[in-house]
Length: 553
Image (cartoon, rainbow, N blue to C red; front, side, top):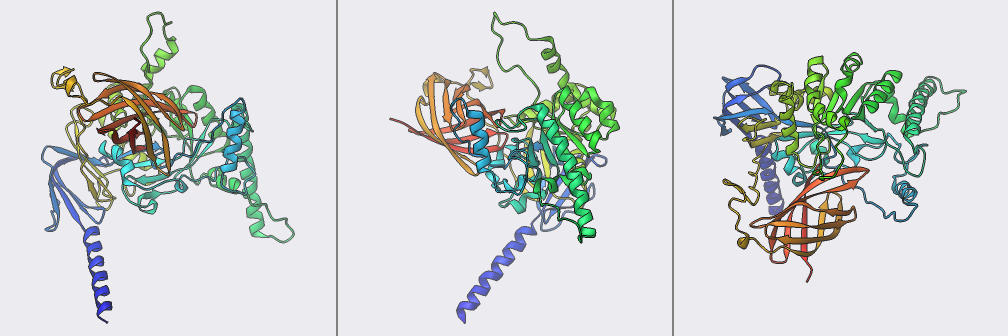
């Protein structure tokens, strides 16, 4: 009997604690509030309770039980939304495909690993694939993105012709159900191919897409006819792929076409018009050439903030870059301003950039090329919420909406800014201040660097990278000359030559690029060295993931 009473008491205590946590209220007072949906409040208060915005305004009352944050000198925005990522999605294992038949072998291996399906279409061309099935929830993987002020992301795969049905997730929470805001949001299609099988060419891809849309329409008709009167009619064969496309051809969910260059955008708009699809363009680097068509067809753009740039210094005897390449590089930062001027709805997305800091830096560059700062903020908040059909719950600072907020000191589009707090579903995070890179103290390049005080990090390391849902192993070979670091990193994803390697007072940092899913993905590594071991993080478009290594004798 006493044992039961003790258990009841413990249960009651836990229930009370849970209610206390979920009922935690916060108030950000004396803060500048950019509501986005309405006028900016120069000196007001935002009250948060139970993960929602309870009240907002110049005269909002601060509850007696609220934890109060002094917002003097700060600005609060709706939480920033990255409108297209693959955050949280585990990287699939990459089978070895050496030898001349690598492409076909890779296709065969992918088909063998594909989940069983009643689809009549090949692996890689199956629209029933949902990103939600591959998302892994772990707050640590989102830390770098949260630190930049982002609270929400649309996530989907970057492989296959059908990249998956995307999910909108909040970047905090310990379970997939907890972080999911909406799923599915859209069907995603890339104009790619399937090596070693049909469609193995872009012409084949467009032909296969048209056939799939036609088949889905016909399948929808047959299902409706059979449901109305099954007697005397052969039962339509079940096909998950066709069933997944039916909501697309019926305009019940949008289809996102990954299209950056002129010919890709034309093909996407033509397909959308031919099949009356509710289309969205993702990437859209040359979308400014088609503002009239985009406006007429009511097609929004998820505009890439991964602006083109020269990746290597020109050799003295190298040929000059083609004029088209130079023009493209100059025109892309102007695209957002031209879309805004034409009344085309658009949102910003990272475009696969390795450093999330490039997102805000290039958004600032867009404001220097014809886009107003107000429109840029809207492209990171309310516009993506409207495009994804969730503006009733996020994207602006209004009572009753999800408490996703980004608090900033300084101009969000300036170099001297600090993200002081991020609220996600009412949970508060305080981003860590960025570390000053070695050799870049107040005195400029080389200031504050004492080579004799730097650790000796050269050597060959056995490394482990804890990617979501997968552990990568390999080697890291480092060569040190003072504070400069060179070398290579070898994993299952291939061999990477490290770049911008630096030895810091506590360890080292470097960048690199891997080819994954046919795309080049940049990353950076920050590590702390203790004796013959190091620990740190790999910062990539998927967020920050742990890396560790042990120096071989």
